[in-house]
Image (tube, rainbow over all chains, first blue to last red; front, side, top):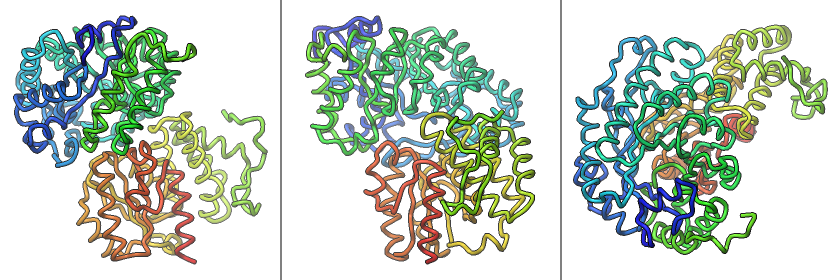
Length: 351
Length: 235
């Protein structure tokens, strides 16, 4: 994004809870680069060079403050021996579960990053991006949290029943997933990622009750984040955060992705300088926004969460849907520049 | 273990205001607490001890369904988590299956219903709705997940489905439900279609855009919609 600082300086400034020149804007594109290159989503994801070119074109076009080497969540499942199902108009899905019965947890082997072509491809994307952006633009690595990965490994229903009914096997799976997640995250840091976005939707109070979370996902997150050699920002992937902010702050995460269903001002107050707030534009609804609505939504988010730094404007899921038009994205970018310039003198004191 | 708001009356009328079906509110609260605590044994005991007389349907309508509806309401207000909603539905489904097995003649007098995950591989939402509907005494055909528009249109037409529930998690699949609904309406104009899933919650106008008759925010709300639609089509 244009301004007196580089995107990296702007992002580090806000992460230090200082007001940089303007509110950083993270437009987390995954598929849109395919459109820029005139490729299908499937073909676009097939080569790191395509992804890098797509990200660089999107960075220039929409003037955001980060590049995103992330492709799709199921890339981790491929490393575990699973399959991916592509579609023409959206993110690929993970195929059939790789854990079909609980006993499989005993024998399933943790994949090695070095021996996983899908992960090596992701690392190469990061290396190439690093060559292009240097230290001027943050490169957001991505992992799925060990606590949430089982949704893809074994299916949501089976995983919930495991959590409630088979604690020993649950912890065996967590141990394996933690080993994988830490290795995958650290490999991305070594390849050049500035920080790691950790998708952990099951950490949301929408998904897991507080007492169960504190006995499970919270412990897993603390152990995992402590072993990752870089900053980790936790994203609950559209699920609400507000009533879990205190727990999340104690996991060691440096940032939190906030839902469109959270009152962003209340979340900012609850965070109270302990984590950077990332969010919370409604990506699904964004598809039908007009440029005028986009500007209004950006303005509202900045008014409620921008003061004092500690805020990165972004969508609420960590991925802009394929169906969101360029006109809306241009409007978001323009509004971020117009209303996000510090100091935010236009925001009433009570913000 | 019972936690009751001070204003809760001792007897709840769950008979849609006609006063016929009355169950002690403490019992209802006990069952609800057992469900959100995922205490299968307690839930089974409560239902077994309180449904010794009367028909299974009476037990469903006065105890099990109201408890599930309350769990669903508490999910919408953020008081309970989706994992608890899922487990509550599964426990109640198991209980009801023992009282009223699938295929029981008492379930037959219902409009033909089916549920599907369209072009999507996330099945939790469907599973929760299916459990709640079955716990409500409904027979529902499960068309599974990852079903294409063509497959769905063929299945619905073949089975002459009267109430269809479409679940999606991903936005592209939710948008594609428009094509499925349009084609089904051409063949079976009387079929009622309910959609549900995250895209419809994040975009409250989407269910109208795809041409559905209604959307279910939560499984318990879907049960109420199904109940109302079933009554309409049987009139």
